Length: 261
Image 1 (cartoon, one colour):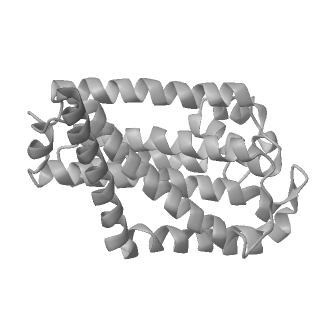
Image 2 (spheres, one colour):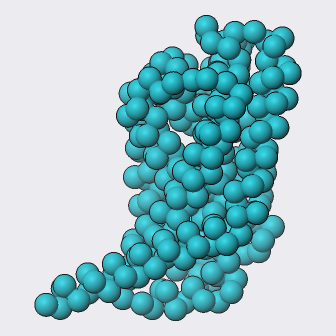
């Protein structure tokens, strides 16, 4: 009976975090949904329609078709990351995180709730950008499992990254440093706008050290049936990143890193 009551209390707490995150996303939709959609639209217009006509085909596909999956994934990455880092740091800054930490919920479940909120925003915005993409080009889903699994794993990875960043951040400047100087360069150099087969040997070798390349390529494979990387390796990297980062986030949260300091 006690176990059932505890499980019920934990479920209420977990679902409350998700509902709160969803309401936050919807309430400030002008900040959470509109900007990434407008940005993606500009990318489609500038890179796809204007520059794409001169580029021609990449790997046998029109340039617009080729970059569409990459732009969708880029949106998922930035929004999954941004939602968690801003929401969790906001809870720290507002001094209402303590109320959550003293609740009956275990830390791993609190983490899961915030990550689920980040995934929710990433998938929501990614879905809207996918609809926008269909106004500019036509592409079909060749491998449904690859699309769903790649986008879900990637979203979880960067939601966890946002959580870890929020734990260590001491001010609002520190939650924008990593996305600006690390995440953005890795994303742009992750094969979103080009195939790495077009690169010189030294750049091709360097690109394989970028984990985002594997995520974008796995997602693109689901739409186009072509990939720049070995797919088993790509999934191994994504699954491994989820396991390692989740374990690290739980350890940091249990130690009170960035919370009790």
